[in-house]
Image (cartoon, rainbow, N blue to C red; front, top):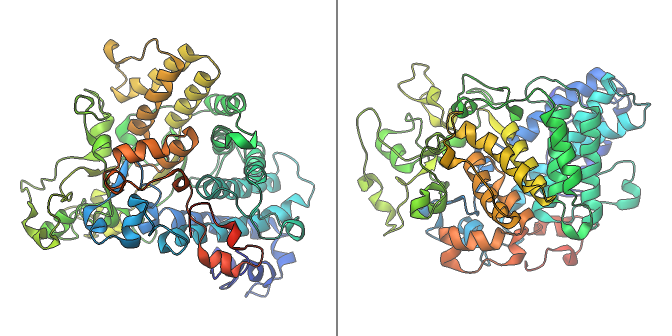
Length: 522
């Protein structure tokens, strides 16, 4: 933020290492180009924009940052060794006093987003001050920049509440302090409206389209806090209907996570990775520690257990979990079997961890991001799960269908909502849904309960669970009941629906004071 210590380098423009948002706004290019020259030339703007996309990908969905928003829910929790000594590492699931304004991982997430927001804001300012005509290159670039800022701000508003609004045409009026909750969400919605209106109908993989804009705008209308007066299921449904009229379709579920089939017809937006140099490193973080100790980093499902699956998320319905007989999504999403080339490991290699009954290294793990190309037997010579490079989905057509169904239910059209959900469930049974697995008549309240399980089954590990729990008001209830560590700690509270504002931000941002800290944090 304004004087927070953040660095950002914008792709080929190399604008230099900035020590604050205000520095970023005034420094000239190290290439000798003035800002006026850079932002008056569409080719420079587009080069700049591609660099911002890369930063959004690398700073929010790779390495440790890739699992941060997954954990602390009823779907995914931290591994036992990460929890053993308590403190900051454990606080993300314990929700205890160690989750506070000094928590480094929370600060890192906050700081990772604002350089992206600010960089997009510079493009938006330059293009909004021109005569924008829909369908022109300038309009398309504006739509893409608004998508980036809107998406980043939606995450910030959903997880931190009131946020600073980085509108460079109004910064003299708003400063860099937190705006009201209503103004924060109005800003998100306005950006996503422009993304839907101006972004191109088709684009290079990893760049936004109007479909992505409409999908995110629908999510914003569904998630805007009720007290803002902006939550509108009718408008959200209209957005999702727009996407449903585009050329997206459901594909075989396994194809979604097959690295040889990136950007399927179901993909609306996915972060683009490869094994080198743009690996996401996610398996290094979330694979099995026993596999790493037993077979080394050359086992493609090895890792360090930073997050594992909750019992609720990996168990069958008969055992009190979510999985129904015959659902193909289960074994595509979660690893249950840790055998490897005919050998099965045991816990002897991690006995030093002294975890008592908490060992979870061979309990179910997230499978969606496993990348066999990194395996020592792949023949590619990568030989290290650090190089995992599957794309990470952000928006999928199935998500749009489920979100649309949820809106229909809230609009008293539950029978229609059920039929839409059955489209997604049909795919989950290989496009041959048994009659006894079809959803039938139910009340609106029953639908609200069941859709949350269906969203977990479909979108497991795709970074939407926390968002869904918060917007539906189920965050505390479900996490306290289903997350092993939160249940054991017993300290989760309603204020934990928001993360704390980093103390560094409050101390260094001239437009914030201690009163800006979220309730319940110190």
